Every structure is written in C-alpha cells, then in structure tokens.
Image (cartoon, rainbow, N blue to C red; front, side):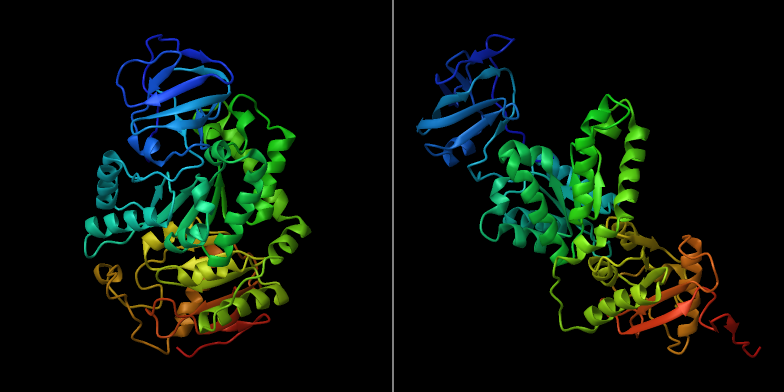
Length: 449
C-alpha cells in the first residue's frame, strides 16, 4: 500500500476554504488547524521541500507552492484555491522523500504473503531503484530455503521514476511494471501522462518484462452501462502501445456494472488485436537481440510461425524465461508455455499472449514422482534423452486442451532445451502438426509395438 501522506485535522470539522495567493503554513505543531495553518505530520516532506517546490492537496484540488521554509515548517502560497479538510492527501511531485515505500503494516503483510506463497507482490510509492532493492532484501529475509520466490511488480506513480536512468534500473530490478495513470496524473501534467505511458511500455518491452496499464480505463462505467468514446479510445491506445495487460479498478470492484465493464474491455481488446495495423505498430519498436541460443530460437520461432501460419508457439520452460522471451517478440499467434511448476504457470498469466499449461507429473517428458517434481533446487531431468517424441506429443495434447488447435493438420512451432531441466536453455525448434510428431501432411507413421 505504501505510506499515506496526509495533513492533520482542523478545528472546523467542515474544513477551511483557502483563497488564491494567501499564505498557508504546514508545520509539525499538533494543534488543530485553521485558515492559516495545519499540521503536516511528515518531517520528511518538510526536509525534502525547497522554495519553489509544489505540494498538491486532495489529488490536486488545492495547489501550494513553497515560498519559505524552516526546520519545522513550510510557508506556502496558494496557487489553486479550494477547500482543505481533515486528513486530505498530500502529493510531492518535485521532491524525493527520504522515506521507505514500505510501512510497518506493509512489512508485516509481506511476511505473511511470503509465508502463504503469493505469486506476485506489487509495490506502491516507488521513487527510485533503491525501493525495489529494499523489497527484494525483505523477501530474501523471509523466504524459506525451498520456497518459490514471488515476482515483484513496481507501481509507477512518481515523477522521480523518470529522472536519469531510474526507469530503466527499476524495470531491470522488477519482474513487472504497473502504469498507475490515476496517481501519475496527479503529480505529472495531464498532457505528459500519455507520453510517459508509452515510455514505460517501450522500456518494459525492450527488457522483456510484462507491463500492466491501470486506473481510470473505463471510469464512467462505474455509473453507466456503456463507456464514453474517449475511454474506449484510451483502452485501445494502451493495447496499440503494446501493454501486456490492462486492468480495471473501481469499475469492477465497486461499480454498478462490473460484468459489463469486463465484457467491454474484452471487446475492445479483441477488436484492436484483429486490426491489421496492430502488429505493424508493435513491430515498429526495435528489440535488442542477445547473442544467445535462446534469442536465436525464439526469434526464429516467431518467423516460422508467421510463414507457415502456425496456430501457436509452444515453449517448454522451467522458470518462465523462455516464454517471456517469446512473448517479447509479440508473435501473431498465441504462446503456449508448458512448465512443471504451478507458480511459474501462474506468474506467466500476466504476460502478453501466453497460455500457461501445467502438465501432470510425468507428462513433461520426465519420469519423476510428484514429491520430486516440485523440487525447485534440483529440477527434474529427463533420464531418457531419446524420448523427445513423448515431449512433442504432450505439446500437441496441451494445445488441444487449450483450444489452440482444432484440426489434425494445424501446425505448432515447438521450442525446448536439451537436456531438460536446464533453466533458460532453448536449443531445439521443431515444426509439427497437431496430430503429433509421427504425422505429417495427413500421413502418420505406424510404430512397432
């Protein structure tokens, strides 16, 4: 949740009206406020603020500019007048606060979440890369030796994330990013938010990290059964930009039309992804390739799938890195990620175009028992190196189970790493029909019994 920065309370329970250009003081005095001052119980804000810095109260409804400061107070000029009342929030767009993004409650919640085995942990109030390093350190402290590590998502909502190379470093440290447009729009100029959204999405795509665009997607559907045309266009823009996922907030959590909101969002997704311009826009972003077998295989898989009009790309993966690399390519077909770890399967749901599949023990080409199958330190390795046909058959079964193929002659592009159980290794690519590896062009080989 992150720290909540708020003013104190006023003697008038209805609050006070601040006039334009008047002077208003924020201080550490616990006395109730009036028309000239109020307590700001955050010495970090006073310490970090300088003359000329802007403070926004109540999501920007009141705008203050610092004109003088002391050790325990800030004198501000009211630039945007309005009502200020008890416990209203304060935003500091010009300041980087010397404050942890994790409150004591957050730390307690994090310890509990790690104990019960959550898949993702999202961090609010991220100001700089050190905040991500802090949560990784806490996860290391509480994570049991044999436990699966939760993925970390940073919620980008502060202007300081865009200073220097902060954004690139934050993305590198995280497993995913959320574009929190509502909070970002309070501290940044509204006309900057669409550009920052594109910058975040492009940075995540180049790094191969999933990015979620959230807040105020279909805001009017909290009260209305249909969105405005501007909202529909906004959702479409996030998809055209290349977001992995888009997220509703109050529309589905507290709105009057939750089902209609979800259905509308899905309709917009389907319509945009069927547009011929969609993949042209995605292809405009140049991707840096590494000199690795995995990069070569995943790039080739995308090209082969497009050339032969395959129905899906199938990736066998342990911890998801090969599947993420395939999703980064934004192929024209779905990516079926087959993994023996249920945690990996759940984490991959966040990535673009990925259909995770969790096979039963033994169906991955392994011969391990259930107890050994989820040994994260020593992944199961296929003892029968020549049984690759079994693995390919399971790829076909998974594609059929997910509804990605419907005809025996539908083609699949399969990538895998030999020997099995080697994280991040992809060194084999195979094209096969949905009927299985023993068939081609309607003719199937009869194997000896």
